[in-house]
Amino acid sequence: MTVGPTEAAEPVDDVLAALADPTRRALLDALAARGAASASALAADLPVSRQAIVKHLTVLERAGLVTAARTGREVRYTPRPQPLDATARWLSALAGEWDRRLAAIKHAAEHDLP
Amino acid sequence: MTVGPTEAAEPVDDVLAALADPTRRALLDALAARGAASASALAADLPVSRQAIVKHLTVLERAGLVTAARTGREVRYTPRPQPLDATARWLSALAGEWDRRLAAIKHAAEHDLP
DNA sequence: TTTCAGTGCAACCCAATGGTTGCACGAGGA
DNA sequence: TCCTCGTGCAACCATTGGGTTGCACTGAAA
Image (cartoon, rainbow over the protein chains, first blue to last red):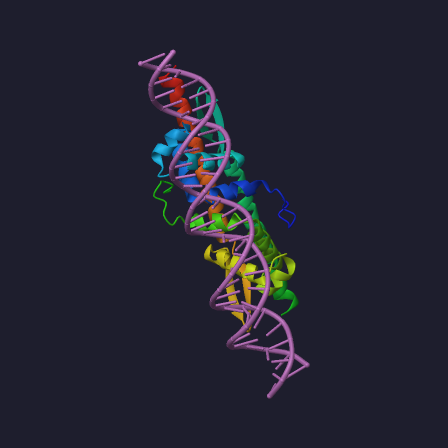
């Protein structure tokens, strides 16, 4: 699972960083509601400038959470659920690992030092 | 599920923000490996100062990912898997919702505009 | 062909944040 | 009792990052 200290370029890194910003989450919500939209269209909904939206979309694209597709003079962005699901699984696995380790330590404590 | 734009004080917000930092993830890894440890002990493992560790632990505690317990003159921190699991579920549900919406939009496009 | 909506690029601003050092304080062990 | 280890607090620094404004470019409609 490679959760160890040598976690350089962890795939979930970009996703977590992208999801950490509330504006970005709102942006993803708006995108998911429409199915696909351009930066300008999204800027009309959110209380930030188009340029800010574009920056966020770039971050989201690097995280694989959206894909960009140019059609004529506009660029439509579409949400991608896959990395979301992958990260969910990663988190879940990590939680499981913690549970295991903590249980093992507790068990050892109860037996070796009574 | 309240994923809407009025997502003030979203419970996963703190968790995502906390998990977004790689140093913090390494810190959690070290903590989970030991089961529990003090800030000073953790500082011996990671390449940052104790004070930096303390700051990170504060963030993690606010996110519910660790709990602090004082024993004598030292404070031992213990990882808490629960918010991790909750966030995993939240992400998974969000991914599911995206899937639903995108499928519905695709379906509508194929039928209403043939 | 002229006009206009949508993008792309760049410079700039300010607040948040990860990190450091220095020092004072309190609890335990020698 | 004295010394020491682990904390807590505060000031401070550099960088990142979210956000804005301004301008140049391009494709499509009038």
